[in-house]
Image (cartoon, rainbow, N blue to C red; front, side, top):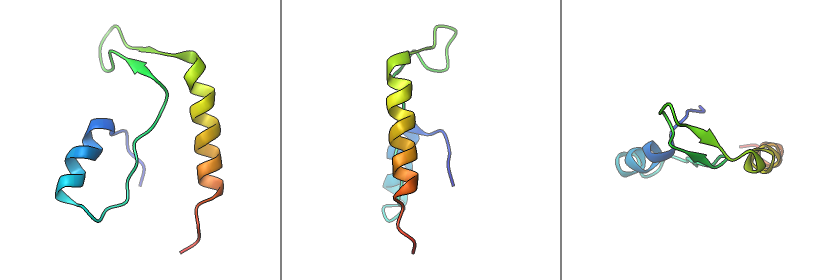
Length: 60
């Protein structure tokens, strides 16, 4: 399952310590506010890393 949960991963991890989870993404300032901004130069780096990660997930 994929969810938007940066801070939430830390909170959920305390209750489910065996759950595999990661939190990563482009640099965002003032999230969830009218002043929300993304650092454009970090979006491509994030996208490339995401694709490479998905391509290398081992089959269980």
